[in-house]
Length: 470
Image (cartoon, rainbow, N blue to C red; front, top):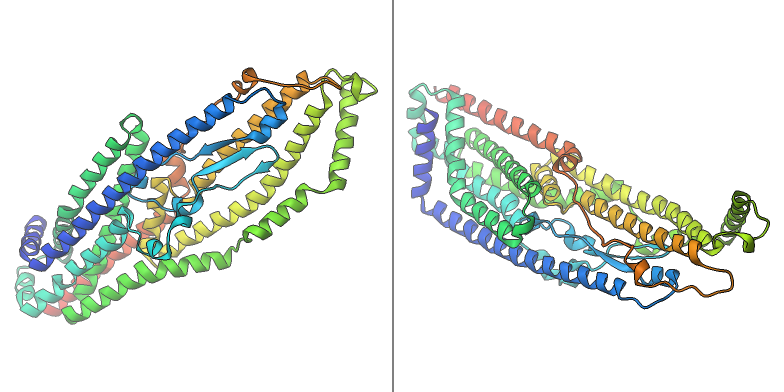
């Protein structure tokens, strides 16, 4: 019975000229956004690889110099682009693509693509996620609004109910038929996106990317089911197809356009962050306290003399300058961890508010999951930033240890390629899908709740309609 109802819905929709027009528009936009995402991904990946190779060559090609000068020479670390950023660029355009690593400083990410865009470009940006999470739901609502209301106005719904079809079978059949019609558009585009991701970088299209792709597909499917359930419920409850259409358009406008803006503003109000100037002033104040520096250096000197059982710095078997440089780095690292930790915690808190806001709009929960699975959310940006900072600290420790071992009092010390090559090239491993989903527990729960609610509403509305017509 479910299959029969689904086939009926699919046949009627496929014969509807309005459906074919809407499907063609969605298909064209989806293909265009996927193609644009692929071009962007391949260009960015190539640029990052070339830049990372060049910065490595520059590091190894340094002339002989004091290791501390090399520490200030610095290197860049580039964030690898995720394959799924072809579909969802998320926050990447606003968070930056590279970080500068040098002595005494933890830097924020640089080169934010959004900074180079005009206001019109930012407003009009369209990627695969926007098509899937904003336009496809609108397509579903435009398809489902007459499913019950239209049939009731035509008089065919009473005939269907007279056959004794159970409400749950009726809802399941119409939902299946609607999703089958949507699949006629989504499946070809999904296949195209999968080919694009594989073609973009066949050597690194690993199981991790496949598992994330499958999870993203499941997220979209659940979200489509939610929207379908809401559409069927309103269609069954509304007194006319016109009322159903207006109600569903209002639902889409509120949840897809208004709710994201409100959620962002609320998150920022609940967990405010300092502006760049305020943050830098507070950071500099903690880093440049002369009294603290004097006391720290005196403690280090006393501890070092005691450790090596000597009475003067000149008698030390190591260079005190290397030890003091590393002590300064350790102190700076504590300050960086405190200030950047507070700042990043606030951004993480904002992201959690955004997930909880999914209670008001299923789009917010689906979008949080989409960005997370694509590797373009803030938590994975923070994961990369921590890895890059750990690499910076390892560089400084290697160089300062070399100074401590080899510097001689009153003599210049120059190091060369042998020391530079002891600093490994920067590599980054993205977190596992388990790590990602563990930080999206709220969004997963909220989306599951919406699925349950939408299904229950559709079933209740259909039972009410059955009782009314019966």
